[in-house]
Length: 563
Image (cartoon, rainbow, N blue to C red):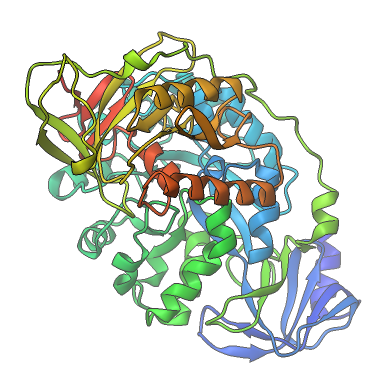
């Protein structure tokens, strides 16, 4: 639509393209609920707080209109479906903007993966924006499928879908002024740079922020988040499938703080979205926890738009992008109608999209493993063990006495000590590393995955070496995914043929398969609510305190591979 049409429709001289009639707008400036029509011209809101006639009129009587929600940090790959299916899954829930970091697929196939997301984002109903992946690989202590340097990212800086530089996970690299880190930070000075600094405090935090880093989604306590807020960071309250920080940070979400707080999911799978919701779930829960609805809805849209420089959205106001969720109540946040850029997020719009062909097929190139590869030698009885904290990706660095028997430290199911291994799968070096993990609850069989943050090698946990070998080898046959094995038999599996990360099936199919996978894992004794993503994060060496990669067990606090 032309500029003139927007002006004339806003003035009511000619009929608006669409008018939402009879509802109440939640004004995020004043906090008022105002009965009004909303006039839309093309992709832009042109009229509010008045009555309008429209070519198309939609009755919203008894409903509340709120600005579309903005997920400020997520990895769409963690939804286990393509950007198109993610769009179809969450846009009808009110999410009209998603700011993604495609570093999962970038760790498998580099710029090819980032360009896939940039291309796909031009055809989705929701507005997908991209932050360029800053840490591929996340550290020097893992083998990824690709490496991205500053020179690789600079040509994409001015792409219309790009906001800035994605989460800078290698915070020790920043503090120690590692040349590759410095080159990326220098290139993006004055532009948006996302942060990622779990537990970083004091002067080290000052130095990290002084590098030009603006946001943080890794705060896990209100005290940590408040320090980061006071030092000028926008804090993104996160509630994913594994990383659940919303309850801990909820007390900070007041009307005073809300302009500097946003919401994000980081990593959330279709089963959790179906059972609980996406940002709509966070909104419902935060209000149920006693948070002021004005503060919550600001964090979900207006504050997020301001934090990421998206000045064209976040309010239902003239001149703003027509991103609107029509909901039942502020407390319920159940959307009956969603417009994204003036387009109704429904079957007709989803069917009309142009689909970009997937990339990174046949990406699992792991060597075949045998049961004896999972033996763990060594004469020392005291053994480092990864301790799982349910609902968190931070782990404990535990030490258990595990005596070797016939040259092997065996799993000890009585103490919930099971074997974990990471196997390089990009065809680079065939590395294997083994260790122990506590907290899975697994009593028999094995679970394996190619969703293994962020290098996405094969991660496998098990009580039985034969089952571990079967599970790991099965992943090569199905182009990656999740596998649950017991007694030499595959109980359940989910193929993820796009980079070993995403399914080509509809999100409903993936959801149903995840139900089968969870049931199969539970049958092995697993006590974790989300065992597959919990497993994936045990291999991320930028999250304290003890992790494992294909290089070995990693002491994250010392930022080194254990001997």
